[in-house]
Image 1: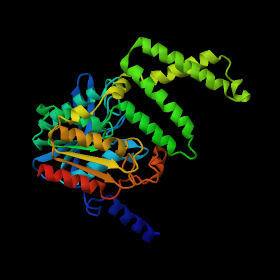
Image 2 (image 1 turned 180 degrees about the vertical axis):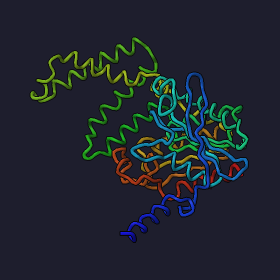
Image 3 (image 1 turned 90 degrees about the vertical axis):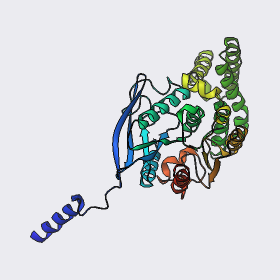
Image 4 (image 1 turned 90 degrees about the horizontal axis):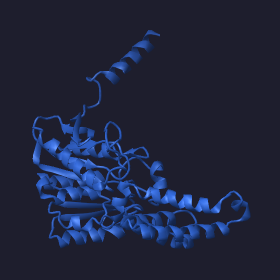
Length: 366
């Protein structure tokens, strides 16, 4: 019994004594905060342990309320990026979105993408106050919607952005993104109803247009036409299903109003109408465009050319494009790219993603 006790005691010592533990982390993590109006942002700054001044990267999340790790279906994208980049000699700031985690104040849906750009500007201002950061070597990495935010910040020359990395960034307006995203995801489902998809997407596009235009006459006409279509669809249902709809007119109006309400919040209205191309034309710093071959949310075929053309039109020659084979919107190795797969896949990036990205950044800041 004494021998067994001694064995487990030694295991305990090896597990918890720093002298026996695995190699200590080569960097420090510090809880930090900064403000933008009523919003108090809470985040994590990762920085190498050795005393000195370091280039820095601000990580910008995609759409929706995201925590500082941009955790999606259990995959902590930004935690892994921060870990890798910091080990490569960079400081990395990641923070909770508005009204998420430890960040207080105005929520995501009450805000717009342009306001998120202001948040990033404040994050950069905070980093410039630190003695351990090289103020002229602060860059941005934005994922998805963050790939819209980063060019907004970089296009304003007073921000002095050293570089931007756009992971699944967009080159066309939000309405076009949602339409193509909806088509691609529905087509990736088993036995897709192609006729239904072909009929419904133009209706969705028209709804986007009237919401963005904020024309009451156009909205009223759209509602009248769409309610009539919903009533027609109800009449085509089997009798067994129709009997559950007691008041068809009320049902049709309520269904349409609920859908329109989802697209009428400040964030969505801005996103639907915003064209990122003119902003990209004003970006003069180095740009890295990263896409996933199987991304069904931001398709490379829809966005790569408009983004490259905008950079060229603005005279920016310092850009690079990389499409990762088999990668989905989260840059995981995928089978179809459907969001339904996200939680089932390995919680890691496709091979070479982190190395490729950090190597490119190092060429721009060293």
